[in-house]
Length: 247
Image (cartoon, rainbow, N blue to C red; front, top):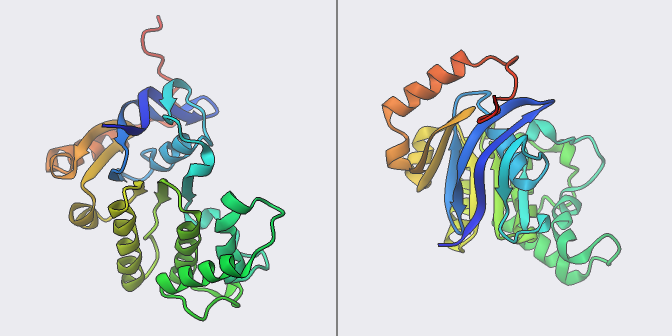
């Protein structure tokens, strides 16, 4: 079995304060993994570590031959500035950047691919609209259309279904399941555990430290969820980095 990411006693954090502690394990190539845990448990931090936006404070993280351009990363909507005057089709066309670079012109073929991506996510006819005019659900569809054009083997999603309507969630979840069927590696931060149980074969449950990692049916047990809540409530944000093995 090949792996997309391997983590060896990895600690991630900010300003030397840990947000994820001593995580060891791997994401298999082609796996579909839900990343769950209480608020503030380090889920978003872990995604940033996987893509390379954060370097480990301790331990070693291997991307196993992946370059950054082969990883599509969708941050939380709150982190995206929608005030920039850009249209829907222009936003989707940014997904071609991996192959076109900054200066190659956008051909009719590339534009048609962008238009097809909008159709695939249910936004046919939205191309000329400014992104600032869209609802949260519509904008999320635009971002998924852009990822369709990126065509990356690895996809990292940070709360992709938060604050959007049920129909959009169902439509975009089908896109995610389709990606998995194509053999892509997907890691998604999620809060709806019923959704995880129904659609995600694997789960990583963390509360700053790993609670369980493996088959969803084994990880999302009541005792593990209770342990995660207890650990999150007991966490001290002022704690220093825990250097294992150092006197």
